[in-house]
Length: 130
Figure (tube, helix red, strand yellow):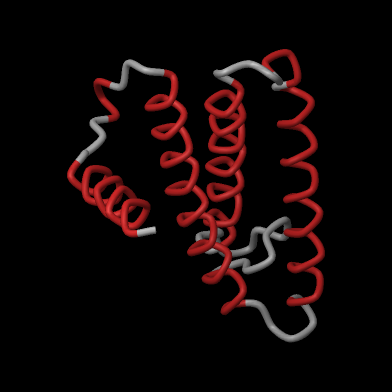
């Protein structure tokens, strides 16, 4: 039992000492990890933009915003699953999927952020003139 805990401790200390340089990732495992990190960063940006839009929305718009965002998430996930299906089962699938998720997430972030910067009189924008 002590051997297991020593091995686990050694593995954790080695892992934290290992700093992944995504600019020079060469193994598939490193590429997958970097792609996932890029997607997680894009997702954090999306969540920030969503919170900004949510905070601007009045009580009548909040349910519509939630419905739209949930539908978009389902679409993004289904579309990326479809678009990456040829890589499914392979070692690069994780990075291909993360790349798709990142691209779609960045696009949605741009869409939401644009809602906060509409021109006065733009009737196609939820927050016109803000």
